[in-house]
Each structure stands twice: as C-alpha cells, then as structure tokens.
Amino acid sequence: MDQATLDLITYRLSYVWAAYSVVMIGLFVYLSTIGRRQRKLAQDINLLRQAIEEKRK
Amino acid sequence: MDPKDHGRGHFALGWLALALLLVSAFAIFRYAPLEKVMLEVQKIFYVHVGVAWNAFLAFAVVCVASIAYLKTKNRRWDVLAAASAEVGLLFTTLVLLTGPVWGRFAWNTWWTWEPRLTTTLILWFIYVAYFLIRSGVAEPHRRASLSAVFGIIGFLDVPIIYFSVRLWGSHPIVLGKGGGGLHPMMLQALIITVFAYTALYVYLTQKAMAVERAKMELDEIKEGLREGAQA
Amino acid sequence: MGFLVKVAGLVRKDLLSELRTKEMISSMLIFAFLVIVIFAFAFEPSKATTKAVFPGIIWVGFSFAGILGLGRSFTAERENDCLLGLMLAPVDRSAIYFGKVISNFFLVTLMQVVSLPVFFVLFDYRVTAGGIGKLVIIMVMATFGFMAVGTLLAALSANARTSEILLPLILFPIIVPVVIAAVKLTAMALAGSSWGEMGMWLRMLVVYDVLFLVIPFMLFDFVLEV
Image 1 (tube, rainbow over the protein chains, first blue to last red):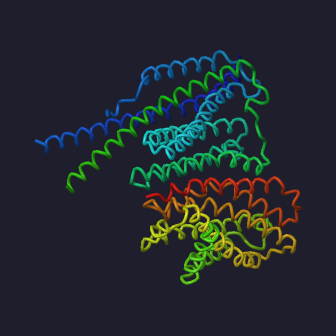
Image 2 (cartoon, each protein chain N blue to C red):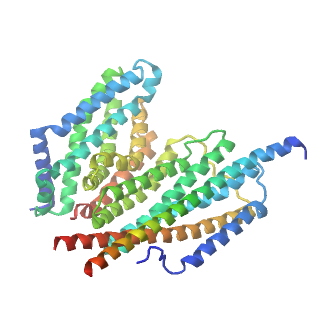
Image 3 (cartoon, chains in turn blue, red, orange):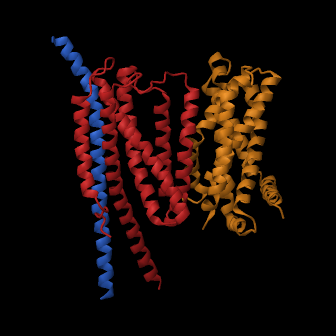
C-alpha cells in the first residue's frame, strides 16, 4: 500500500470518526446534564423538606 | 421520591445498552464487509439509521402516551411523554448532525433536501415546539393536556410531511442509502445497531422520567407550602 | 336547537364583533400589503426569476397574515373572560371549534380575495381566467386545512403565557405540507396545468383537510378544559 492510498483511507476515516464522535459527544453531554439536573432537584427537595420539618417543630 | 430512583431494571438495562453498543461497534467495523462505493464512509450509515429509527420511535411513544394521558388523566403518562420527547429531540439532533457528514462525502454537499432528511428537520421543529408549549404553560394539568394534544397532532403530521416533501423534491431518493440491496452481513450489523440504540433510548428515557417525576414532586411540595401559607 | 344552528350562531357572533371592531381583517390586510411591498423591494418584480418564485411570495404573504389573524381569534376572547362565557354557553365544545374554524376561514379568505389582485398588479403577473378559477379552488382547499389545524393550535397557544410568539412556532412546522402543496399547485395553476396533472397534490390536500378537521374536532375538548 503506498502513501496515496493510505492518505485516502485516512481521509475517508475522518468522516466516520466525525460522525461517531458527534453521536458519542451528544450522548455524553445529555447524560451529564441529566445527572446535573437530578442532583439539583434532589438538593432542592431535601432543602424544602428540611425547612418544612423545622417549621413543624 | 428520590430523583435517582429510575424504576426496575434500570441498572441492568444500562449495562445491556453498553454491551449492545460494543457488540454493534464490533459488527460495524469488524464483521460487516466494506461497501464498494462509499467504502469506509458507509459505516456512518449504521449509527445514522440506528439513531433515526429511535428518533421516530420516540415520537410514536410520545403520541401513544399522549393519547393515554388524555384518556386516563394519569400524570404518569405525561411524565413518559415528556421524557420520550426529550430523548427524541436528542436523537433527532444527532440524526441531523450525522446526515450532513454522510452527505458531504456522498453528494459533496452538507445538506440536501432529501425527503427523509427534510422530514427529520421538520420533526426536529415539531419536537422543539412541543417543549415550547411545555415551558409556556405553568399549571401542570393544563400543561400535560395541551402538550398531549400537540404530541398527537405532530405525530400524525409526520407521514403527510414525508409524503409532501417526496412529492415536492425531484431529488434522488437513495433507497437504503447503502445503494439498492444491503449485504446480509451489513443488514445484521444494522439490526444489532438499531437494537443497541433502542436499549439506549429506553435507558435514557427512564433517566429523563426520573427527572420529570422529581420535578413533579418539587411542584407538589411548593404547592403544599403555598396552601400552608394561605391557611 | 340543532347543532348547525348553534354553529351558525357562533359564526354570526364572531363576524358581528369583527364587523364592529375590524381589528382582525384590517391588520391581516395591511400585513399582506406590507409583505407585497417588502417582496417587491427584495425581488425585482420585472425579472423572470421573480415570476418563478411568485407563487411562493403569495403564500408567504397569506400564511404570515393568516397566522396574525388566527392568533387574534382566541386571545381576543380572553378579554372580559369571553372565553369562559363561551365555554359556559349551552353548546357542545365541538360547536365552538367549528364556529371558530368557519369564521376564521371566512375572514382569511376575505383577506386573500382582496389582496390577491394586488399581488398580481404590483408584480405585473399576467394570468388567464381559467388559471384564476383553478387558483381560487386551490386557495379554498389550502386555507381550509390551514384554518382547521390553525384554529386548534390558536386555542392551544392562547392558554400559554407567551401565546403571541408561541403560535407561529408551533403552527408552521405542522402546516408544512399545506404550504408546499399550495405553492406547487399555485405554480401549476398559473402555468396552465390541467386538474389531472395536479391529481396527487390535490389528493394530499384533501387528506390533510379531512384529517386535520377530524382530529382537532376530537381533541378540542382538552384544549378548552379548565
């Protein structure tokens, strides 16, 4: 295999790489936002619950 | 309810999705033969179709859950519809991003008004509209009813949009995108990929549902506080 | 009292209040004229390329002006709790839907009938009588589908905080098939095509009209519930 063919393969693989990394990055970003939202909601709920408990006392 | 509570089998499903994704990666890059025209670039096809299939599945779930909500008025269906729409929007976005990468190589242009790609774009707009409705209505029951109505209308519109765009464009319709018939081994790799992304779709939807349920609970606590303050 | 009488009563009420205020029809008309003027500046009316996109220009004007009117049809009812009064009226909710569809259809068609000649004159577009006849039928069919689904979504967005900006954003993706069909059919009618050549598009438009009259009719109850 000469250099030109290798270059062509690399060129084509760059497209494959771009498409798959877009998907993986998208999924990763979504998973991390979900995690962040979950933590934030859990925090808010706990805070409110504590406030209610203290009021009762 | 704990926002981290995802329902039964969530943990196992996550591992199943991951395993299936690894198997599908193997099937795509090692098992399926190299396509003759597009060569390596044809490998994009698998992930593109796998995600696209689930983007449409997600919207079908939104429609069914919306009908179920309007019939039963059970908030659980609204939670499912909202979660499925969220994952559907993510998947539609991914389809719209991988499509042009394929198109740049195959047709030397980032975007073509090809019927399926165009329908996906309109679907994306419909998903966005769905969330605009959800964010524009504060009262939970009203929000659920209105977004359910739009979910049904939007889903029923998709086949007509596809048909009209096909009728409109004199652009080439690339059947199967691999060009004509698909090699049996390519088809097997495709099926595995579709299943992998379906498992991932269910997994992500469960996560999004947990967030929606937690939001619902937060709303209820706040509502309780408001009533307590008034009393 | 029959269902049709009730619908007719609601249509009469809408048209009467419109006749007194003229706020929907006047704003739609002015808007359509403005679109014509803007397009005349954007695309040289004497050029051949402009003749080619003329059907598109017409429908951009009609759909934007139509959405303007649709948005008003339910937000106007919010003043003085008119919507609540309508819902308390001893009529079926579907009668309210059909009444609104018919009155919106009537007003938007009126806007189109008045502004269409202006489009032709200002863009100096020559057309045969047969072409105009076909165009009118196409306009009626497209506008009906547009109003059938538009009325439901207008009622829906009237419930939201951001109703004015929400309506175009949720309505345009849904009416994509109508807009495509209307532009294509208009171009064919103006080019002198026969009904036979338009067959597929007309059938698609009929399917759209029927589907989006029946489905909103079934769903309208849920949009108005308190």
